Image 1 (spheres, rainbow, N blue to C red):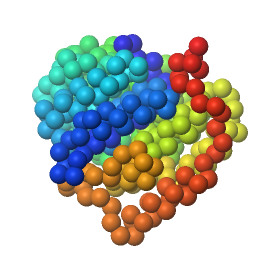
Image 2 (tube, helix red, strand yellow):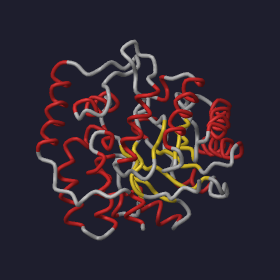
Image 3 (cartoon, rainbow, N blue to C red):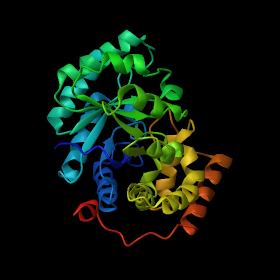
Length: 309
């Protein structure tokens, strides 16, 4: 599949049974529900999918199940989040064989590379597979900055085509556009600066809270795309208390709890993460319930294919 890099790509959750074994059937159900609600792509095994809590074989098993249920309806992009280049290459090759349509490539975990090391990591993975690649810039989470120096170093790698920009400083969108024009497709990667990212040149949104409120997420981007800025702003302001959760340390637990409150998934997570407790859990539940009772009016829903037609 040729990826149309635009719209809403939720970072989907990996569902678990009570014994914390992977529930492939429920993971497939969650993904299928999101597609039926209009998302334009899915990110399998991103941060929200608990990538780094799974073994290599578990990742491929989950990815294969997601590719199966998606069945070509939208592109499947999988997170590549590994300690070193060898492991990242091995996963990228296996992901291509499993049917992924693209890769969301993170910097190496733990070690913080210098610019030339980071560029070599990205180009090493790119050379090992034909899949298109979205780089994932998230300095607060991973302590590594994919700055313009790095982007210049990898600009000659034709399969590195997009950037998920999760730096909280929205000036990054303009700086990348100014330096590189249309060389890289930009995606907003932090939920609570998503609309700002769209205004500054992003073509899409890799989202966490879409897992709980997919139709509102899809309509936010569609409203922006058709120039209905009042509607986009209405949805964004309604959504903002929840969108802030995506920038918090416990985003995975919060997003999975939001899914559970909305009847879409389970809050179970893999250790060392544990489900939210006490005041924090009560706070997130109250926020989700408040959002559910004040949802904005949306146009009659149509799947993305119908809108495109």
